[in-house]
Image (cartoon, rainbow over all chains, first blue to last red; front, side, top):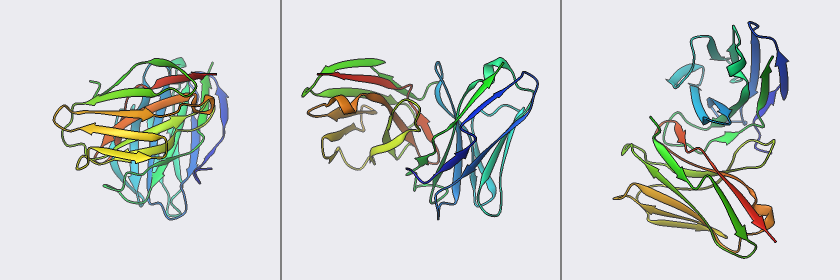
Length: 114
Length: 109
């Protein structure tokens, strides 16, 4: 158990809908990262938050957004969902914003868009 | 643009053999190179990591070899066991990680 908790584990929704994925980082970790894992693209970095502030952005679509709350949990919001958004979404956490890249991953949320 | 290239895509090794997975990176700003192990239905788990100021790091049966001039690094799994069967990802980064596409390792008895 990595100490990173993601909910829900599975999510099935229809095209055009909006969903929210939740992540609780390991105790003491201030950084949260979101990754998308699909069969053909591997693990793609979406976005990083550090202590409530956006720190870095990767290949995140404009339809997607995230935030980190004062209690350090994070939410990834996916809207206007398309079939191609079906993937595993992972959250990872680490202690610091840079350098300390020892990131621990949660179990992921499997999103299926039908 | 893929910044970390991983090979092979899949690997079959006999029990007790050596598994070798290779990665090459492009971004010379990367200063941290971890390997992750992922079992089906689970999240990636940090296995071993290296920084570019050392050429080799060993933890148990797992060794990372690092060649800074060639911008390449590799994972060696000695005495491979069926329980090592998983997908392995290399990564590189300085602020956040860029992952290779993964290698599916199967260790057969």
